[in-house]
Length: 260
Image 1 (cartoon, rainbow, N blue to C red):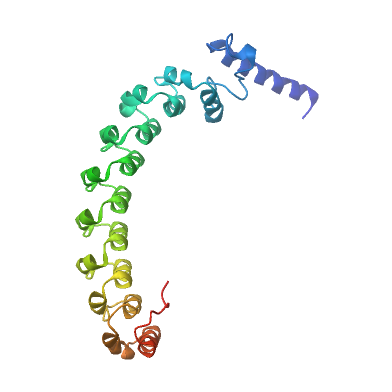
Image 2 (cartoon, rainbow, N blue to C red):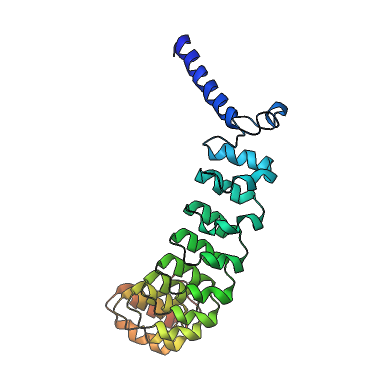
């Protein structure tokens, strides 16, 4: 870059910085003492990092920007403003702002965002709600919201999601249900769900999966079914299942480590 072009570039930056400061209420208060800098710590910049640095230093100023026209300034201000000041932002037009609000509001107030149109907002709410309130979101249209619900629901309420239409939700349920409650999921249409069930089920329930159509499910079931029941798998069409059954019978009731 020539000296002339460098000079022009520096001049443009200087004009931009001067423009920011010209609009800024802090140009005559904070800036003279080095408490803000248009190139690094600046509330007027269209840079999330610079805005965040400013509000991190001057948290008492955050509430002045909760209605700002720039969505990112509002979102960052919502991180630092007092809780009482951000309650009205549950109706903000920008989903990023609402996500910040959902992450900060107390659980009982976050309920106001339970049906937000943005799924990330609802996922945030699902992480925040008290366990007793989670079932209110069990019918959410987005499966990832329901996955979060399934991860957090108490065991007694998990069966509510055992027949969810989405495989990932049912997999989560199968990983969390107590072993004695897994019999309801033995006939799940998805192989991945049945394999989890086979790995965790009580012996008598695992035995019911020894003739499953999928060999990985049968392989998992061999590890947990009653010893006598595994004899039937010595004639399985899959080598690995036959070998697992033979190993299990050789070792008796000692636990095996074939599946991990």
